[in-house]
Length: 599
Image 1 (tube, rainbow, N blue to C red):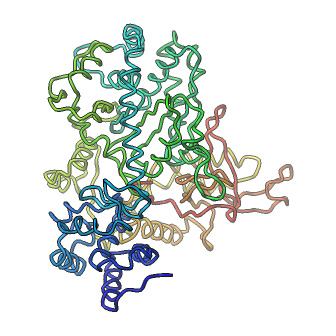
Image 2: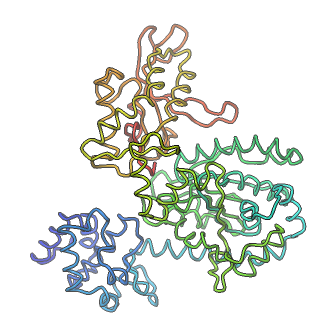
Image 3: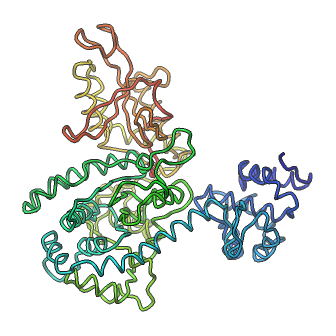
């Protein structure tokens, strides 16, 4: 039986939902809890606010933060206007500082630090959680603490001389500069849990491959190594990057050629690794049936949400190493919890203890600068290493300067960007064009046409079944040469608007023949994992009109054409192979001329 509240409170809930302060889901959750029947209405609203925080990626409602600045409970887009007044008025009448004490009077609904049970909400100090997320956070904290404790035993069993010799083989470091890749390798080789973070081009993939070679060389019975990533697109990118790095390592380290065949060839999604049950009730691998793995590497870990990470660590056997790779400054998961960003919150400063610094110096022969040593070290920081040198672009390059300004939220960069706007004589690798919301769609279409010209030219060649795979490969390669990225999904500069504007523009220019939703040359992106087809969230496909030939059965009748969608799948021998699907067989997807930054 669903709860009904007073008429006045029902009206307030309706206003808050209209203002997008609450979701229908947040209200429905409390209606479905009979334990909430006797709760005062202001406390009910705070519980609903705790649920609403999940939509913003927060695990809990922090009552201390709410007291200091109630507007932090809202996304940036809602911090002005009616939402602002509604929230500020409510917090003034019912101060967040008084909520925690009041909630402890209802143990049937809310568990506290000292209270065990299965209550739907958990109060930890001044932080209010839904039970599921409090449990997940506790599982992760316990995992990290237990692995950190196990590191003491691991390091007592290692032979530092052997490790140092192998590190010298892998990293031919010269000069006095710290080799952060070597430091990361040394840290991870002597840890059951380690995080290697760094921006684009800092060598995360190369570092982890050298780490795996070191671990394989140290192992007496071989290792079962698993590579994973949060999305299908990230897993495919990791597979491709590993293949390229493996080729380079074979040339650079011929003395370790016997170990290279033991390196894993392909990555998979974390979901696929854990093996979801068909009925959706959980995963095949869990604490009672752990993964058969000695080492698990997860790339693009910034996209891991708390629930998926908790499921992963539950499924790891006690002696399995877990290494996370990723850029702490990348966008976090769209689900609740920014696991990598939280773990790496002190990565810039280092924060190593004297004991950690001495251990790393023993293995690498390099002494960390005093700036990276802390007198009050955080235990979590001892498991994190940041790669600080980009091999892709310099710190003073245009893209390097822009990336640093974005990461640091530096408003001083705005005059520089305004100076670049419209000034084609500036010698920089960043081009800036400032557009109003009204002109953005038209201007972007005109800007992209020259970039899309090679792709559109390839579409003019008829696709026959006998050569369809080769043509699809060429189109995929050309399409990925340029990509329009948007910060948001909706709005004048969002993905939905941009895709619609581009398709309309290309059709008006007779560059595509659009009849309905599907047409020759339409790029699409998969929006959710689909295990029946093997397509994963983030996979890119291209719709093509394929002509049948007498010696193929692709279409069925010679001379006819049929729309098929070509996806690329990593292949150990060929690099990539093409998989074809009828549009009707595909999971939810959308056009991919424009993608969100997160995708």
